[in-house]
Length: 304
Image 1 (cartoon, rainbow, N blue to C red):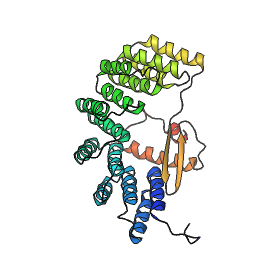
Image 2: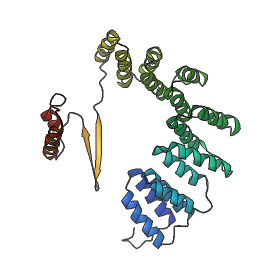
Image 3: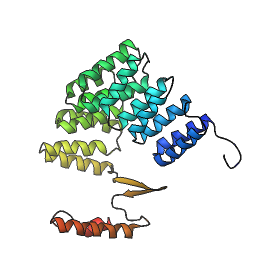
Image 4: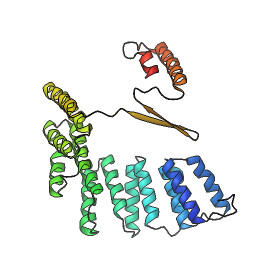
């Protein structure tokens, strides 16, 4: 755009900052911020909101807070950006504080804000507050709860051991046909070792997503923790008969402008040899500190 002689405006910078937020290109975002200041666009509401969003989603909460305070004539988007960013970076209690400030400033929370606030309550263990906020959303603001809101409530109740209430919530809001709800419920049952409810949740999830390996694996872990090995073997046979396969683990890392993906058991990466060599060096250093031969096979790690 610049090479063709066109000058970016506030809408251009808003779009590019959003791209930086999604891709976590914080350094590129910082450079754009400098250009924005030079172009005297920093006071613009749209650009200011985009900066808050970019810094928050990139994990730089200090700059996100600073930019939020600099935004003049804040709107709902301003509050959404800081609350979403804090929630995504596990600053749940602070996200709830900003929600209270938003409420006190007479801004009306929208559906997206309530999703984030309910997530924050779940992560912070604030069960009673989460119940109150959900009821406030439905009864005072008259917002029809979406599946995201309901999943947050099931997670909130299930995560902190209110499994019976979570099951009743699913029934009350007729959520039996949603796989996301049952996956959340099953995860909570796994955490708290509730074999009975875990069995029901897994059966529902298998019915909705027959080729999804997660319910088999999670339910197998629940049975194993209870010492019910017959059920574990039965689940493994069922997976084999139905052709359900567990997806391999995957991780990735970004170095500079290049993102490398790694799949468990795969050695097709272009620098697999260098990676294996580095792993062998690290394992040798670890061996100098403690005896790990009984736990790991160095050649397996470096080749897989």
